Image (cartoon, rainbow over all chains, first blue to last red):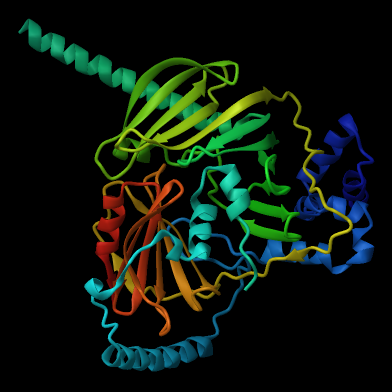
Length: 155
Length: 314
């Protein structure tokens, strides 16, 4: 089966042979590997792998690790066996308490008291560009917006 | 008596006609997933700027493969297989990987549950038109209230595929316009085109996973949403510009989408209140208990204002 994957990626199979190979892949456990390899086939074909051997692995790893957004729910890790580290939540809880005290202190000591009337009027150029891009990239029907707004700079 | 019978007959014929039109929407939704097609898509925003993209979609034995390339501007490319989306940004030498379970890129614009649309929109026949050289029927989805806009859809008479879509606001101004400039229906399920345009001379960087994967406790409630809207997605991530984690909740009625962003306001930043506009979307901001509430969406401003008012921080 690995020969089939290799042949398809390397464009060695054509026409009916390609369809036949894809049909075989369809019923095999190797299909998921093929899907991700197909996306980066050019990287491999053009010997990019030799230049940056980690790129292929990175893309495959990222596709696997990227959380999927489900309807009516929170983000789920793709690993079904993900365990819960309760220490994290304890830490978050303690940090939350500290943050709550800090926020309370800040609210009491600064003129910014949460009253809407004392705040700036919203100007178009004062809105976070990151937020606008995230809205477009997650909701747009416009393929052009998706390509432009789909990329967020690394943080 | 005769008038009453006539009225009942008209009601029945009207309902039948409406059901037939909703059936066409169902056929259009199926066509966008099942058919193999390629073409040039032109998009026009509220500033009348036109952008073009080249797309090809193939359903290979029940699995969807999509490739979208920018024609104007940066040489960006999207490869999408089912929910896996990879964007190759040759302008910035970066690769973005995303999982988009419910991406609704034109012409695949419909929700999985089409009956949901009937709660928010009435349907009408807008007549026959020619789009991208093909005969189409225009359907008009009119909102049942003032919380959303009008959607005009031109469906190919032969294949049922949507060839054009216009979103028109309540002042009859075009907010969004997406249409095929040309389209070709493919007989082959060949997917050999499903490959990126990698430049060997460039060292690409891959995006880091910035979404926060741990389950986040909701510290807000948003009740009494506008009729028809329901939560369809949630995510949270750290924003460098804000120096804070922002939570994004997306609400939809099946066609209209509203993002609610909630994030703490840093000490050195001023919270914002009021309304604004960016492209096809309206924006409304409120400030509550140290948190910025920001609503963004291609819906009337009053809808955004209503929802932000309904955000309660626990």
